[in-house]
Amino acid sequence: MWNGLDKLLELQRLDQAIARLEAEGRAIPQEIQALEARLTEARAGLDQAKAKADQIQKERRAKERELDEATINTKKKQARLFEIKTNEEYSAVLKEIESLKEKSSKLEEEILNLLERGDVAAKTVTDAEKGFKAAEALHQNERTEKEGQLARLRQELAILQEARKGQASRLDTDLLRQYTRLRKSRGVAVVAVKDGSCGGCGISLTPQTYTEVRRNDRMFTCSSCNRILYFAG
Image 1 (cartoon, helix red, strand yellow):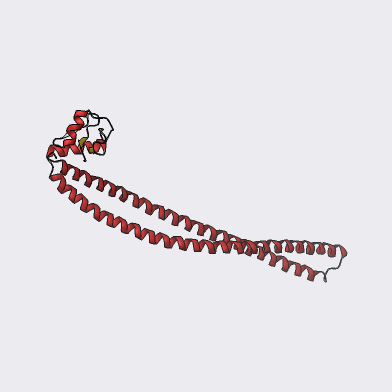
Image 2: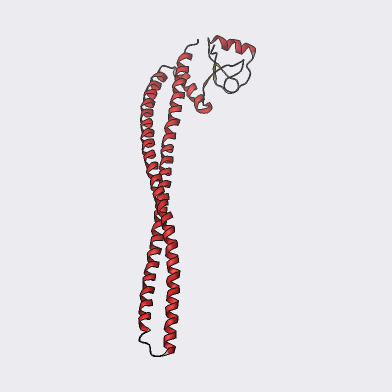
């Protein structure tokens, strides 16, 4: 094996492990944000259910006040009947009483409807509260788990980065520079030959080049993608 290949492969292994952990580290905050969004949605559903229930109660109380007023007015006008002197005025008051009774009847129907709607809304609130509490518990558990996972990942990443720093210092400066350039442009700098082809871009090697690469006694690069080639055995 040519001088530096094993060190180069180890450096690439560390870089790939670091890249994987960094990707996982970027994903976890997004997952936490998704948890927050679900909790916010559950809270909004609860708030909406409560607002609807409150509105129905307000409407019912307003109708009940109207009904009380109509009932009081009806009693007052019924009491006036005993004081009226003329038939014309008596008939007019009777019409007013009848109109108030019709209004009261309509209000009673509306109040009954609001009571039924209120029962449904109250059940919706209860269900929404249960849903929110479940979402809140799940959010807390999953958030704690995600944050712990992120903390462990950062510790592991710090260890790998330190190891990577030490491994990079063991490579020849020119070889490290070449590797770094290839890694930035190609993603993977060192690839194994597979079935006589470059493991990076897939171009076929000449039989002579393939034979020489198999020896691993000196460095070869792909004529197409410039990646460093080696034979894995």
